[in-house]
Length: 149
View 1 (cartoon, rainbow, N blue to C red):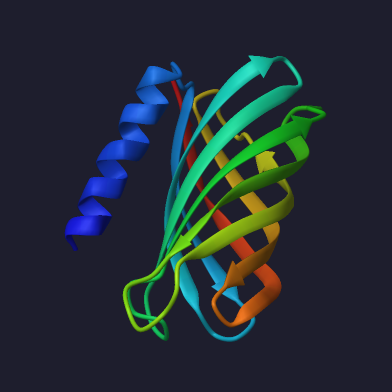
View 2 (cartoon, one colour; view 1 turned 135 degrees about the horizontal axis):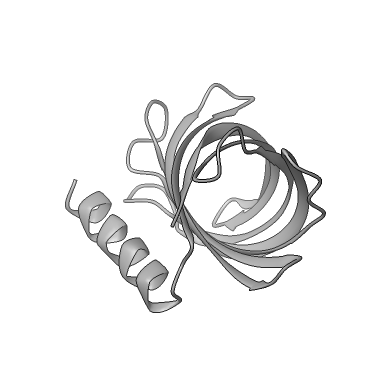
């Protein structure tokens, strides 16, 4: 629980430091049955490119698994939809006996903005993770809520 609290504080600090425009929460499902609860922040670089910092905590299965990623997203808005594609890197942090490893991911999805301030998102992330057991890969399907400031 200490890691989760510290990680969320770091995510908020990174978002504020980057002058983030969007904060959000989401839930993801990995095909092996793993459920990820997450938080994210996004900062626009220009009208078509964003940087996203995301953290996710696994609930069942691998107790203590935490994914921390940073993605570069390109999007093509046509209101109320905002589809995007991106690439990112990060880390899968796990307590012993599991190993911590490098994460490379591809992400694709869309934001839906029924209001100026509130957005919903749905996305698929394909995560490639290196650990002591070698490479593991698989999709995570996520959805959530974003609030724009």
